[in-house]
Image (tube, rainbow, N blue to C red; front, side, top):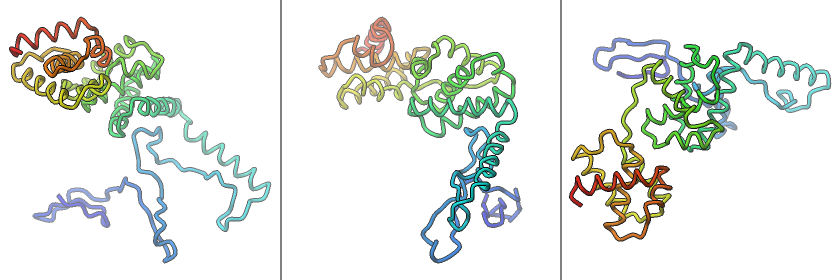
Length: 285
C-alpha cells in the first residue's frame, strides 16, 4: 500500500487500485507564504487527540486584543471580543458528556505526569474512558476513579510497570476502589490484558534499591531461567522480580536486606521469602 498525501489517496503499489480516497491528514502542519517567512515554522494547530475532550478540533479565540496589523483594539471592540470568547468557551462544553470529558481528561493529564507515562499510554487510557462513558459506566461512579482505572488498564495493556499501589498513591482514592473500577472495565468492555513480564519491573526495583548493574544483569538471568522452568506462572511479577533481585544480591555478595528489596518493590517481606525459597529450590542455586 502506498500513501499519496497530496491527493489524499491510499492505493495499491502493484495494480494502482485506489483503496481509500479523501483521507484527512491528522498531523500538524506549517506554511510559509513569503520569503521572509521561509524559516518561520508556525503551525496551524496541534494534531487531533482522543485525550482532548473535543478531539482538538474546536476553534480557539486568541487572548491578544490586537488586530491583524498589530494595533490595539478599541474599548467597545474589546468588550465584544470578550463576549465572543465567553460564548466560545461555553459552546465547547455545552452537553454534559463534554463537561465530563473535560474534567476527566484534565485529571488524566495530571495522573499521567505524576506517573511519568508516555503519550501513547495516555491516549490509550483516554480511549478506554471514552468507551466507558459511551456505555454509561461512569454514571453514579467517581470520575477520578474511572480515570485512574483506565490509566492502570492502559499501563497493563502497554506492559508498563505501574502497580495499583502506584496509581492509588497519585490519587486520593483507595487501592481497592481503583481495583473495583478496573475489574468493571475489564468485565464490561471485554479487555484482554497481557501478562506483565517480571523483567520489565527489574529496572524500577533495582533503581530504588540502589544495586549495581552487575547484580541487575544476574537477576535478569535468574528470571529468564525461571521462565524456562515454568515456575513464574501465576506469580506476582513485582514480587517475583524482587525475589530474583534478592537472590542475585546474595550470590554477588551485596549487602541488602529483604526489607530493603520489599520496600523498593512495594511488596511484603513474606512474599520475598516465599519466592526466594521457591527460586533457589527450583533452579538449584
